[in-house]
Length: 135
Image (tube, rainbow, N blue to C red; front, side):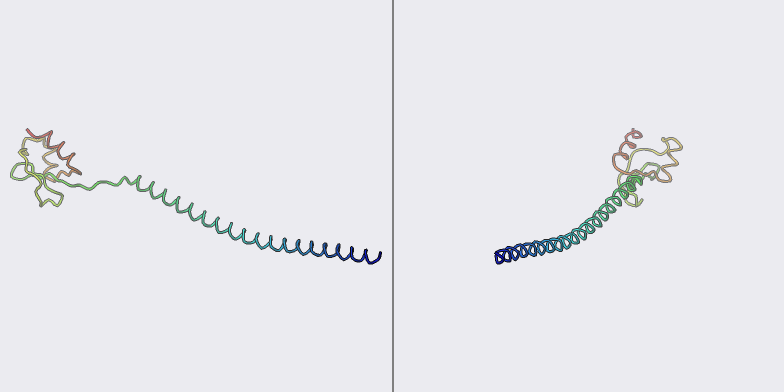
């Protein structure tokens, strides 16, 4: 009978030792995985902060560019040539078109403005002006 108890005690002891080993192994493995998870979470938080900062910077740049309302450069200029209004490119050397509008028939303030150079950003503005003052 004592042999049966010894064998039972040996098996129970083996099971307890095996359970303890499994428990310790589980805890060590879980702790190791937990540290890996913590590192990964920290990396993801840093990436998230970087992406948010980049997104905020892009939004600020967009707002800034919208607030500056980038102005289209001038393309044409009206000048006086032999008593008539002439259209030049903004270099004021290359003739774009000659008109039949006499400078003397225009209002005085407009005559002064054209004498100094009246600038237009695009053809639409130019043609609208010329249409209003041509005969």
